[in-house]
Length: 127
Image 1 (cartoon, one colour):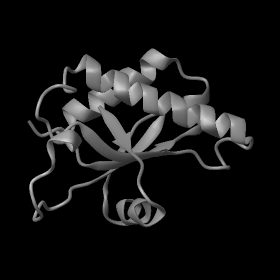
Image 2: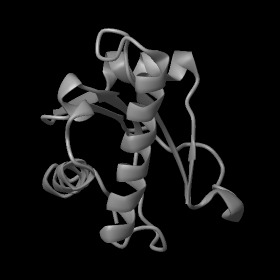
Image 3: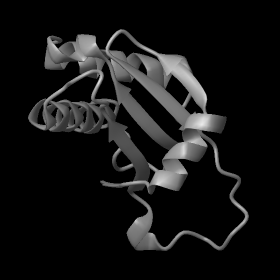
């Protein structure tokens, strides 16, 4: 499973029109695309579209911003694997994770459990 990064215009669209899900450690914005185009090629079936963002207000240093984004990305991948969705034909809409200040001191397991809870509870995953 790979995560394809979004362009700045795609991120702006998701931030403007996407649905928001709030957690103690992050804000998740999700945007459902209407599939009207051709069938997705088989090599892109397990490819997700999303981005992980950390602003300067949250972390002043670039090192800390990059670390926060890496932790969120790895927590998301771990949550998907723990839910057993990496091999199934599931649909996850385009997403943007916005890191919060509390995520700096949070444990990795806490972030993973929050992501799993939001994905399942809010019915973001379509199987």
